[in-house]
Image 1 (spheres, rainbow, N blue to C red):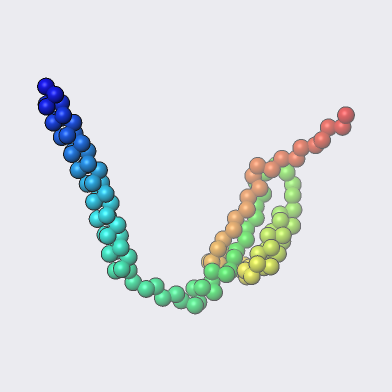
Image 2: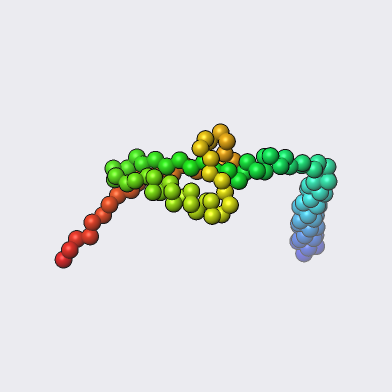
Length: 115
């Protein structure tokens, strides 16, 4: 009985080690596959005209809240901040590399109650 118990433990340990080694082996194969895929990648040539377009921004501000706020002041503040960071503001979304849309939809005015 003792020999059967020891042999069962030995079989269990051998299968456990083999299974754990199999996971490592599979992960090593996957890593080699990823390295091979990276080595097959091709260089990307950047177009200087496209790079210049990435520095252009179109800003659109709308107010769908119940509060009346001058959206031009918000748009001016956003455009000023972007031009200080080196972006060029354009008048059409088709000419822009980025489009920023600001919608004031959840704006509420809360008045402080005097005690």
